[in-house]
Image (cartoon, rainbow, N blue to C red; front, side):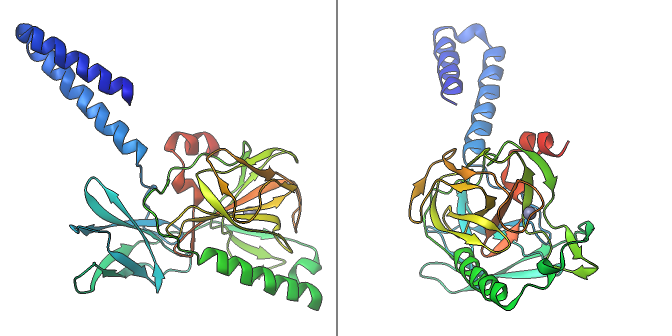
Length: 303
Ligand code: ZN
C-alpha cells in the first residue's frame, strides 16, 4: 500500500511541475487512487458474506457516532466500521430457517430498534459412514466426559470480548488437503448426527498448526471426540477451534499472533487418520471457515 501512496505522490508532483502533461496523468492518478482504495479495503476486509444457514450476513446499521450493540437470537453480534458505516457481522447457525431474521440494535443514548435481514436456503451434502459402535453408543463414563467437553465448548463459544481491532481475514492454519467440507449432513450407521461444524484439513502427524489471526487462547483440553483441542478468541464473539492435535504448544490465557504455532496435526480423539478439524464461530453460530479466507486461497484449496 505504501508503494501505491508513493506512486500517487510522484504523479502529483510531476503534474504540478508540468501541468500541460494533461489528461493521461490525471487518468493515472485516478487509477492509482482506485488501487489505493482497493488496498485499504483489503486491509480491513470483512469476511465473505453468504446469508444462508452456516454463513454470514453483513447487515448495514446506518449512521451512529459510536458502535451500537447488536443482538441476534439473544447473542451479542460483532459490529465493525466499514467505510464510515457500522456493519453487523452476523453468524447464521446451520439450524436457521430460511426467511426473515431480526437483529436487535441498541444505539448508545437512543431507543432500541429492529433491523431485519433475509436468510436464503442452502442444501449441504450428505455423508453416510459406518463407524465402530462405541462411537455411536459411548459407555456411561465416556458420556460424562462428553457432557463435560460440551459444557467447556459451549462456554468457549459464548465468549464475547469487546475490541475494535478485529482481523476477519485469516491465513490457512495448516498446509493440508481439504478433506471434508463444512455443513456435511452426517449419518453414522444410518443414524443422523450433528452436521459437520468445521472443515477438515488432512496433513501428516507433526505438521505445524498456526493461528490464522491474532487472538487469545481461551481453553485447551483433551476431548473425547475432538482429542487435543485449542480454542482461540479473536474478539467480538469470533472464536476458532483446532482439534485432533498431536501436541499443543500454547496455554490458556496466552496471546498469539498470526502464524504462531499452536501445536501439531495429529489423530487424537475419535478419528480415522491425522487431520486438523477447524471450526469458526461467530455469535455462537458455527459458520463456514472458508468465508474468512481470501478467495484465491479458497480456489486453491477446493480445486
Ligand atoms: Zn471435522
